[in-house]
Structure formats: structure tokens, C-alpha cells
Image (cartoon, rainbow, N blue to C red; front, side, top):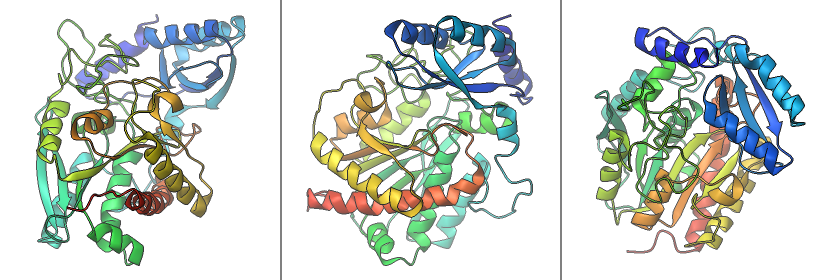
Length: 414
């Protein structure tokens, strides 16, 4: 019985039918002891009827868990018997999915709805035609299913200091690619003098989706899919967590060796063609980049390296100062509150991430990961009507972050 719900997902993958999440609920749970925390981590390891949206990490730190209908009675009995505080955060996951996009979709590309991979790629190609000499399409990586990882280089002049923007490494986090495309559009079209100054001072390497196979799968089959779609020898479970697969501190904490786990780190560092090929491309930009920004959801956090240790390494204090300026500016427009800090201190140990690899190997001083809206009421299924306000406040934070970076001498004068 426990395995049934996850076999449903596998069957849907094979038949290309969409998985339904009708009557799935998301609970916020708060462990108040190490014993309760261990129990939640045990649930996380089962991968059978329970899927953590926000992982259990420490005592008194909330975690969010999606529970299949077949496991609701067992879950509530277990929480009650263990005296773990819990409350329902999402009453019906499928209802959120059904109302995520507007009922009537626009035929043009914009930010009132979420777009498919093909629509995003077509839009990138159209920009190169619309802005020749400024926008260059880059096919930088490849996937296990043969898709390209497509992005653009945006430049308003030769040899500007480089900023890399990564989106969509976790497939179900749709607000991430939407935010990346929103920023790209603003860099091209905004008439705000501060935005123009920021955009035109840099070369931008912008990739809305690092995990095209997974993202396409969330549109076609399983909205809550997180990983890549590579085959794992000896297992019926597919894919790896592409943000635990990079070759820096791989498998040193906060990742799993279980191919069925959401945080499966892969058979080895760079086992996934997505991470291996994108790492090669990013490495080819060594010496050009001074900033690397990655977008995830959810939790409203602005994180900086590292995820394997709470030690304050490299330019930690500068990163903290840049982060504080950014989140203060972000809050001014709509009152959205973020927290900033290094990954391990702020949320949990998590090794093998793209940002940490870039920071450690390319010595990029301005390295941040945004965990975007919201704080759990919608989670990964943020309504499309929040794309624009989310994008506006992120752009506000960019202006402040890069202004603060200049005070620390970033980018360094060549």
C-alpha cells in the first residue's frame, strides 16, 4: 500500500498521462526535539506517500510535507502519537495546480502565465532576431533525453564584466524560469535609468532552464517533478537532483544516495549530462564572470555559499552586506520579507550545488541563490498573477545588490 502512490507516478511517466494530486495535502510540521526531527527525516527517506517540499533540518525549524490521500490517516496518527505540531498548509494540491495559470492563455509571450519549454526557447530565438548585435542565442548544454540547454548572451558592448543567471535547475519551481525571462526582458526594454545603467554595464549570460527534461515533464506528466530524467541502472526511479550533482563537496551532506530520493546526488559528481555540460560552459567563461545568480523557490531567502559548512569562508562578510542591501530594497515595493545568510546556517546542509561549485572553482565574488515567493501557502505552485510583482521586487534587489558590490570593488577594474 505504501508504495502504490509512487508507482502511479512511474506509470504516468511511461504512459505520458498526467499525475493527479487530487486530495493531496501539504502539512507544516515543527519538530521540538531531536527525536521528532529524526522521525521526520525517516519519513523523508521513505519516499512512499510522503514528499517534503521543505526538508526537516533542525529542531523548531518548520518543514512542509505533501501527503498522499492513502497516507493521511497514518500521517496524522503518527504526528499525534509523537506530539509533533502540525497544521494543514495546502488543502488540495491539485486545486492549486488547476488555478496556477489563467483559464484563458494569451497567444503571446508574457508574464501573466507560465510558459512551456518550447515557448521559452522560441522567445529566446525571437530576441536574437529582434535585437541583432545585442542578443546571441547560446546552446550551452545537453540533457539525457537529447534536449539542448538554451540561453542567451546579452551584451551592449564588448568585454563588459560578466553576470551569469541560472534558472530552473529544479523542474517544479516554475517561478524560477519566469523570473529569469522577466529580468531578461527588463534588461532589454526598461526605460528606468537605473535599470539601463545596470543592464548596459555588463555582459549577461542568461539561462532560464538548466533542467529542460524535468521542466517539460512537469508540463506534460507530473507537475511536482523535481529531478532530471536520466536512467539509474538497477533502479526503476529516474533522475538525479541536478543541484546536488556538482563536483564540489559532492555527497558531503544534505544529499542522498537513494535513486528514488528527491535529493539523490547521482551515481557520481557530474553524472548528469546537464550539470557536466553546463559546468564546462561556465568554466569556459572563467575570468569573465564576477557574479553568479541562481533562482529557486520557495521560502523567500537570499542565500550565499557555502552549503556544506557553517564556517564563514571567502568573502562572507561582504556577501552578507550585499545580501542585506538586496533584501531591504526587495521589501520596499510590496513588503515581501526575505532572510539572507549562508546556505548551511540559514536553512540546512546541502552539498553539491551549482553556486558552490562556481564560487569555489571560478572564485566569483558575487554569488547568490534566491529562494523566491512564497513561504508555503502555495509553495512550488505560485499563481501566475504573482510573476510580475515577484519580478519587480527581484529587479529592485538587483539594483541594490550590484550597487553594494561596487562599493567592495566588484567587478574589479581590468
